[in-house]
Length: 205
Image 1 (tube, rainbow, N blue to C red):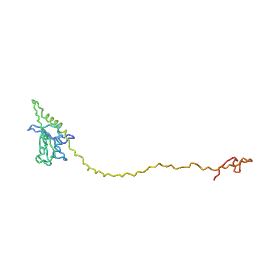
Image 2 (tube, rainbow, N blue to C red; image 1 turned 30 degrees about the horizontal axis):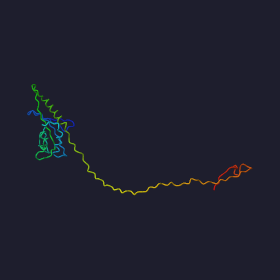
Image 3 (cartoon, rainbow, N blue to C red; image 1 turned 135 degrees about the horizontal axis):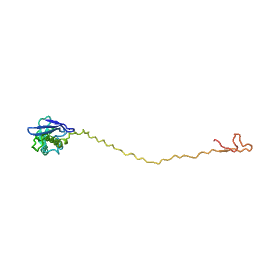
Image 4 (cartoon, helix red, strand yellow; image 1 turned 90 degrees about the horizontal axis):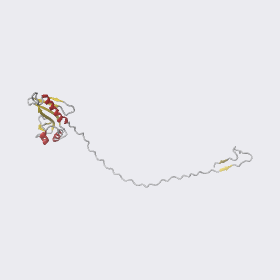
């Protein structure tokens, strides 16, 4: 008996050559989801075996049990409870077993030889069963429902009458200052302040 590991598969492929029975026995073991009940665990497995041969044997084992229940795939599809047994214990793991005829090395025989029959059995089991199996991924923990915040009552604001703004009145008129005309002198064109006689000035009030 030996085993073969394939990347990204649910488990190793166990290979048993039974010379006495002239059979090739292939099997793989995978864990059952621990967040489901017994019927849910079986249903999870059966949904992944849609392309598997009907004579594929399914063995279910409860936790810490050495002996389990076994049934062909066709029977498990008709009644999944056959894999629970009389005590109805939830299965902790499943083992899928496929048996095929072992070839013999005879030149006169048209059947495949020993090596060819083993290779064909491995390819068939991998393509029909192993590559379609995925390990169970539990759901992420869920947050508790958020409490609904209390509604806040908004009282209506009092109405306010709007008025038009009044622009301030500004007197743009400036106070005029008196004008004093200085008399012209006939004798001199310049007065005593040094300004011409015709010069007119504003006086401060």
